[in-house]
Length: 494
Ligand code: AMP
Ligand code: ZN
Picture 1 (cartoon, rainbow, N blue to C red):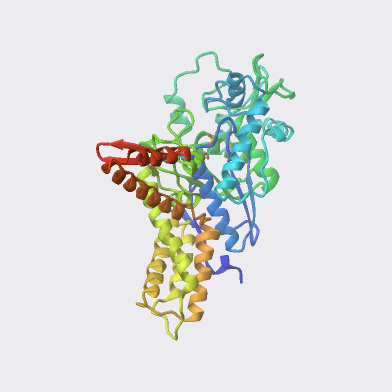
Picture 2 (cartoon, rainbow, N blue to C red):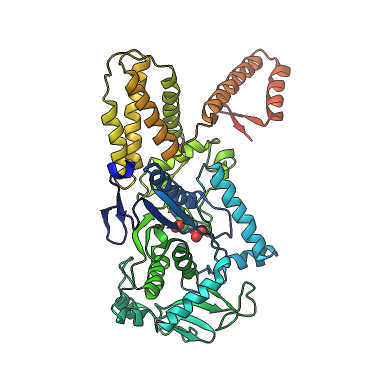
């Protein structure tokens, strides 16, 4: 029997604001769509957290035995600087500033995204479609919405008519809880510059002005699609009119996902998504990590330790994944060097226990209920992917393994097998942790350099300046810099 039948999954649905039993449209299959990156700059760790949350969801669904089609798009056109359909296209702006082609921007940051996700041990999605690869389908969808009388053209641009949609008995606001009527009364009147009939209307197609380089022909003008349209088009094209799961960061709920629902529903007449999942934000210095404010850290900087302002050293992929997974995906998470150091301790303990497992002796009796523990791991994950509870359970096993090592507990051969496979499943397959050994080797490096610092101190006390300088200079040559201060000597690795 498939594992998903024994371990009934519950998912918190942002649409109903409650945990619901997960029922798929088609038995045994899951269609999942996640809004991908806008490729105009490097992904920062905040973006990565959201994608990692869905990587974990993908991994657990696969483990449960579902056949999953996971679609995560690349936004390579149409995302303007302001969510209110104003400003320059983010990619075109970057191209203008760097004096390169927009498609060079797209290529550079798509490659970066793939490199980072591969380094961080992500499973690749099943399909990774691009907005520019689906212009024809987007034009077709606009025509369909216009045919239903739910969009209007002004000067070569097309807007979705939110008031008309709602007066037909629909609910623009169903996901975000925003009340359109209130919003209309509270919003400043349009400044006369806008072509929209109503401030809540949003662009399906925008006519390109003469400066705009990323444009395509359409029945209305040479222009480009609105940002929200690509996701409606690509999710229905690859997953059908009703998909099981749609994910993204919390900040995409409004307007992006609200608009997606309206567009898709306008065409198909059904609710396009059964379970809306939203991942919470990663903070740095108490503020949302963001590209626009510069308040961010790059995933690569953590692996090299190159961001000295924030980090005291480099950390491995396993530690960063552990750090992200020890918070629930719907909770806010604060990034800091201290938090990574604490995660490193926990991660190392876990890896040590996994290592010890190989050397354990078995006896006639177990002093730990392994099958009950295994079920608790499944229960945690099946309760809206509760990774912090799962990790707490994993540490119960760590405690037991250490007792076994010290001959303070016993285990049968059968239980040992279950313990090993269950740890393997949850630590490596589901959480996607990797034991890259860096942590242990960085601890060893630290120990070795501390020893050299001690020897240099002794040399100086003996006035052996030649030896003291030799230690300092030769360490510097291999990229280890000693710094003498009032508190003693510290070091940094470049
Ligand atoms: P973007 O490339 O700006 O379209 O964003 C890609 C994804 O990252 C979206 O799902 C955002 O919601 C998400 N995101 C942006 N900032 C953060 C953050 N600080 N923490 C977590 N997710 C974020
Ligand atoms: Zn999207």
